[in-house]
Image (cartoon, rainbow, N blue to C red; front, side):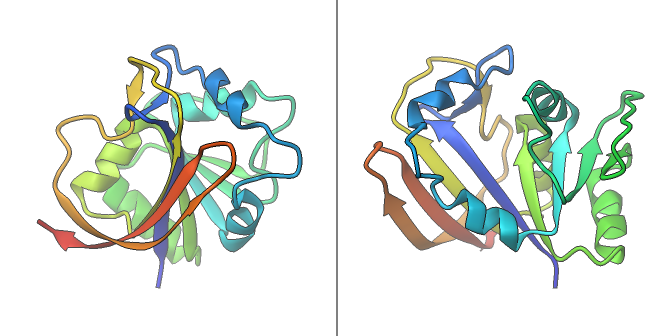
Length: 177
């Protein structure tokens, strides 16, 4: 059974990036020895799905942030990569996901961004949500759940508070409202 998990950080006012895609504000969380459960989560997944703008943010890091995992980049642009672990997908989310599932991927991380998240929401394709709320108000940017978003009923699996002020909540989708 394939599971899609949205694992993402958002500001207290619900933004996942600045308007220009910048995520520099996440650096307020940099505490030596603390990864907020990221390593365990990353080891639990076998594929990644992300939008093209999020992919381009990843290219801006010193090294590719998703090593040893197949990355499916959803885009309508003609992008290219010399990485063997990056695949560009132009199909709508439902047939694309069916194709990804058919390749045997079972635990998939939906990285973002907002438009791709909304596409998955529209089809009730997100099984679990791990949302890390960062104690900062950005006042604008790319929304975590840009309207129009369908209503989803979620149940809390667990939550954890960290000394940095980050609050991480793990939810499971139980159906439409």
